[in-house]
Length: 125
Image (tube, rainbow, N blue to C red; front, side, top):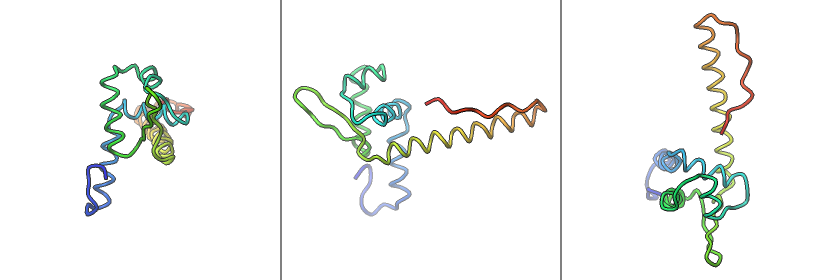
């Protein structure tokens, strides 16, 4: 079990899950994996622009927190999301951030007395 034992309260286990997500490059890796079935290490290197050693460290954290699984085929290693709910979690986070951004923009406009800004189309991931 990632960073926990069976006797930890659920909120602590959840906090450990979010610690696994607590780096922009790990989120980027998960987003790449969410877009397809799986990706090789070389594909992840291309998508993230990381050096191999740094990517390896981030993948180890994601594996330790049970967010991804790896499969070796010959001399290549392929990664995929451990659970489809990880992709759902990223979608919900993106939607939440979009809502927060819209609310913040609306509040800033109201405080400044400016004309209203049209709603944002979406948040870039």
